[in-house]
Length: 259
Length: 364
Image (tube, one colour):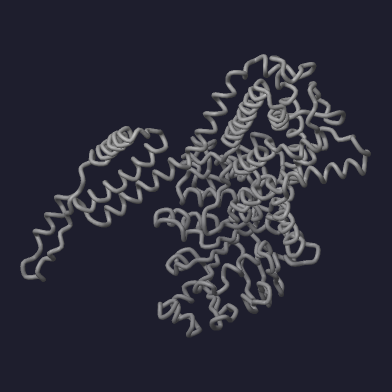
């Protein structure tokens, strides 16, 4: 189910402004890859190009190549909607649909696409996804209550359940814990460790301890200078990046000498 | 609270800097001071005005408010401090302004109720003016209610889809010049005087059907011209309030844009959209000038057919009755005005119900 992502020579623009410059990397299946770096260095922007979500912003465009196994994500006949069904996304702020119940939120991917599914199958999918997101025990008695009534951490796990219910190959997470308390953060981190058995996971985080705890591979992004585009500085095994980074910039960042 | 403050003040360490001489305590007027002073100044005002033989509600209110503002400010300045005094003065002014703003509203409702209730009965609501001479003590407003419902109903059927779809275009799809142009013309249209909308439709009907062929549908078109921009504006505001995160969440699940708009954006904004549409409807339901020009002002019989013949409506009924000038005509006009207010209030009540029914349930 999990797939490999191969990026080569990717540049991202907002209008005339170049936000990210010349990124090449390979993201292995069934692993957790963390993006770290200071604010505004383009890691979230880069993450959003992987499932073509950045196109939602007017004026945003991309040069370069993103391959999902052997398919070109930016190929001429590729439907971005199909890409997003294959590469799911969890956002910084939990965003369950306020008009829907917990149950409907989980199957939103099918429901919003007007797919009909038998009640038993839907029940099964809801339970499986909520169990997958470690939320089933907490909400199984109130599936018909609104999703917005859950706590922040539960809402975020609901969003993860919603994302895995469409059965993507890759799961992108854009600072999924930055709005959560430490206990909810721990719950999400445990969940990430469990999810990586089946999915390719890419996570953007500002929390270096979190990157060290959850990821197998870490990529460090930095700005070339104020007003200049962000670049990929170094990428490698997480414990290598955090103990013996090759580049001086990386060492400065992880030891807290700047950023 | 006060005890802790005092306690910590006395427990200042002895070897530190000398305790500040500023006291946290200040005098305060007792709770009953404000109502008592108000009663006293009211009594004083009544007494003085009686002595001059000029007691009237308006004089009494003005005199009381001014006297109370002066007295409470001075009392507070003496007993409390300057900030409290300013606070009490401004509070008095704010309440007085609120009272002043309520005067026309209450007085209008009171006048319409007291003048209109006498004639507003089941008979008045269920018969038309067919065969009733202007000065006869008979006839009713049924034909005008029918006309108002039919004309504004058709106007709503035309305006709501056009307005809603336009606002969806502006918020979700529009870019560049075309969007700017539409926004500009919608703004211009909001400012069109209603009589001009009426004239426009009269000219249109003249061109298509020839002279003297105006009917209820013409009135509905004229009202649509007035209603569409208001619907666009209010729906646009409501759609903009839907957080972008919800759209992104939907896209990230692989939902195409049009389904995102239909199934995420619209349901989230539906409560606000309903209210906006109802406000637009309330704006046009009381329009008189364009309906006199288009649907006519002399119909007396019940006419449900929008496409044939003249059609009376409540505002035009009021206008034409007042023009006739007899005592009985004034009674009919007031009763019709009351009926119109009741219709608008029912609409708002309905809107509240609808928006409560659709609104996202955010309770825990």
